[in-house]
Length: 453
Ligand code: TRP
Image (tube, rainbow, N blue to C red; front, side, top):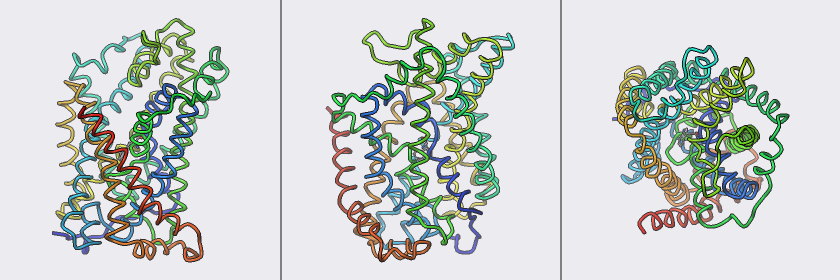
């Protein structure tokens, strides 16, 4: 079994390295293509407020819990639960998390592959070679879908092979600043284009009448997915975190980075959608609702960039899909790191063997999905909408009633020596023991009832 006590585990080299890696995991396709359109559809700024509330009430406390468990146990999710309790049940929760990671990764690389495909499409189109806008995302072109996903997976594996500091940390140190610079420049440009104002209005004017229970479900699911919570990604990342760091503080930065970038992505995408509409492209369904995320990002926006034409169109189009690819890559590495760490810690595999073996296994699933992209919705529902909140719920129960809050406090005290006099800990315990599990529980049960009926 656990051979990890002898093998040397990786560590983040610096605080900023960890923050970038965890923020990189959080900021992904979920922020840039899902959040803005869900928000625009669901009451604009009203949704933003609801979402931000859930992120702080549920997401942030759970993140602090995951990091504490990871850093204390120095293990992957399965090993972590095993190390911290006698229970035979909780390691299974960890294993469920590892499974969720594998499942999410299998479709995540498909969508990530599309972003990569469109990066090339924009270049090829501008060069006048050919246009494959209709190819990617079209299941008649299964091999093209599979091909771009395989390339993307290979990039993910190659980073994971490098390990924690030489692989993940080094990659995110370049990729995250690049992402922010590209995003800011693109927002700066788009805000001054005709139609931008209308997009910003549609995005930001709150419509509180849109808030209902379905929306609460959507916001909760989005919060777990976007913060990469509920499957032990942050247990794993926390296991490489130095005992010098203040867990609530770093978790705060990661949370703010995630919401901040999701919000900024809207400032780019919403004006772009209205620009596209001003050019006569169809962006609304017949019932007046906005196109779904995938159709917008992979049909409307590529056309918009084509229409811009010339060098501007090329730069804009290529940068946009490059931005998405980077965001996806820093997230997919966190999804692959979890099962890899599990195989290393629990089964004594070498990192190289583990990453290649698991990466290839997931690729096989991805190839199947590439030929039937309708599977994405089903897998997403089971493993993201249900799986992640379920994992988060179990984590709260574990923290509050099995591992016990006192132990969490001892771990958090490292890097936070004033914890005994601080308001944070008592408040956090109330959230973890009562507020979070009750809220997650209600939302989870509602999701399942809605699904069954
Ligand atoms: N958070 C990423 C996004 O918003 C996706 C992601 C990466 C993820 N790692 C995760 C989701 C772990 C759930 C769990 O796109």
